[in-house]
Image (tube, rainbow, N blue to C red; front, side, top):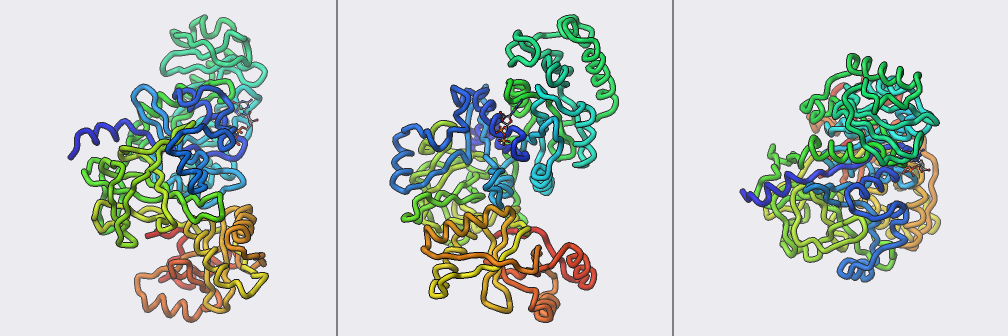
Length: 530
Ligand code: GDP
């Protein structure tokens, strides 16, 4: 085992931020990068893409291949810890990509708007984290505005997500009476010299709740509320427990304001001290890949196509699971059974890209390729092994594809297959009839599919509604029983892009009904992609 590699991976923290649009993910990302010294001024995360700095090697690749990788991965270093922040597109481009990125992280920050609590997309993303037991750190944002009572928010997290919660700090007032944040564990008061609502610029060491440094300036009602919170909170919620956090059963909750810098350093410190270093990865054959192993393995969790339709090149995002990767390495592309030389791997820093000379478990490298790498693929140093645990998710929106020019069936199928490999859509080929059905998790993906087929495959398509609104993968331990079931239900059956059978349901009621009538068949919401 290589000790250098062992040391290096232990300093890695690979994580993502999950949230509902508008909760403050962009602002928090920016402040984390600022806190980590990765960027120098606010506003840069937002301006990403538009203002890319000339970084020789990377720019060349980007120009030659016409690929833009935006800010899918942001790496920065702070106090000897390497933070790899993976972006989970959460807005218009909310798609399966978002879910899959979560398969490549070891922890997640869940951002909640203090006024809105748990919202729909947060909940969905949280469920994916739960599926994988990813530890969650909660950040209750925007406490500089009027929000819900701190205890109410903690209760909501506890009840809605069935998680134990540990308050790690308390808001000192909110909204127009916002004085700062009290860290009752470290006995610090984060506040502003600019008075109520000001940006964080002062940290006072205090001696508990009675300290005049903390309560001297507060209004009576705010002091009472703070005392009540600390008292009730201490009694009513779990104490922080590292093991329970790592197992995904307990979430530490930080109150803060990304906009005004409250909570940022606390979160970064917490991640450094408590978030896990790269975990081991389950693989086929009952094998578990541990990061200490000498040989390199990694898996593709995301593929990004070029922006220039004339090029077919793509960037595959590979999360390393073990070994020390070195530029120029020849790795085995296990699915294809072919070697692939990784000569221009890319590292992603907040402001720039760099050719990666070395990378360690937990790191993400971008591998330019001509389309041979797809989501779920494993790269190894020769071993015939597939990383498992990368699910495909049952889409929530299904549409039948209508082709405008029927002469272009081949181009359309090729295009849809390519987009499916990127993870933009899922395709289902009905057992009866020839028109494919596509499935997506976010409705705006449909527009993207139409645009890209037109631009990249010169094929115009439209979508028609289908009577189904959900798909489930049908599985059975007995292949004969499965075949019989599929044969008798041909009208509802389709094959996915890997020819795995799915059953198309009209509604949730039917899922239950058909499930009860066919107890031997399992109808799965997710499927391993191998
Ligand atoms: P995203 O959609 O989750 O990426 O959210 P943004 O970071 O773009 O924030 C949405 C809006 O909330 C923007 O107008 C931000 O300026 C604002 N915002 C973000 N964090 C805070 C905060 O801590 N306090 C206040 N008052 N506004 C915030």
